[in-house]
Picture (tube, rainbow, N blue to C red):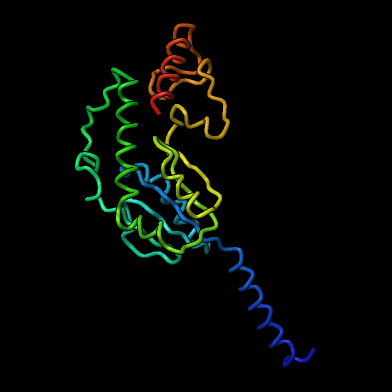
Length: 213
């Protein structure tokens, strides 16, 4: 075949391949509103890798990247929108393990305060009132479900992720079995090999914690 014919065909094939590559890219919203940096450290590599592979990622968090990354947009939650005690200043002895139900109640209360503050922050409100469209939403599954409102707002499928063992009640969201006779409560010290007494207390504690949520 004449080289003058091959050259235009090659250009067309390259352009066609580029278009196909672009159509495989998704516009992804990742909502990680927890105030703990350790949680963000679990999710950040994943969303950065998605951006590196060509997807467009918008992340809502307290911890923006220090260096720009192609296809990656940070929507920063202002720490000033939170009550002072919530932003990286929780006393370590607040959760001493002596009263698991009390510890869970405190965490749930903090989650509710975080809901109110984050959803009311100016940058998050701009996003919620924008005309953005997303193909997928990724959010953390932790103490509260209020951030699933992003799923309703943008009418997109979602993936829930957890940076820890699932809390009491989290498995119910996905019809996963968390039978307290065999699944130990995160806030207790039991293993999956529980005595009858441990199963009893595990069941009672799990029931109470689910009621608190």
